[in-house]
Image (cartoon, rainbow, N blue to C red):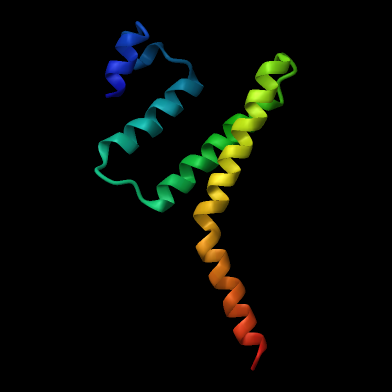
Length: 102
């Protein structure tokens, strides 16, 4: 599937990608090679994207529109991770409450 994307973008080889694109390509390839993605893998992917987006946000060369886009993208990744982690956090809160009753 990713090879089709590369063809559409007129990229003949993964070697033609820059380092950042190669890292993204490798992560996407890992995801696509599996039938199902684990929650752990989704969280790792989100962490990677948060780090990448944060790094891009630090660039002084960003236009106002790109800066707004990156901030929204970062917020979306963080919200998604919070949603994924919410059952675990809720369990911790309930357990702490129950333990405090003893």
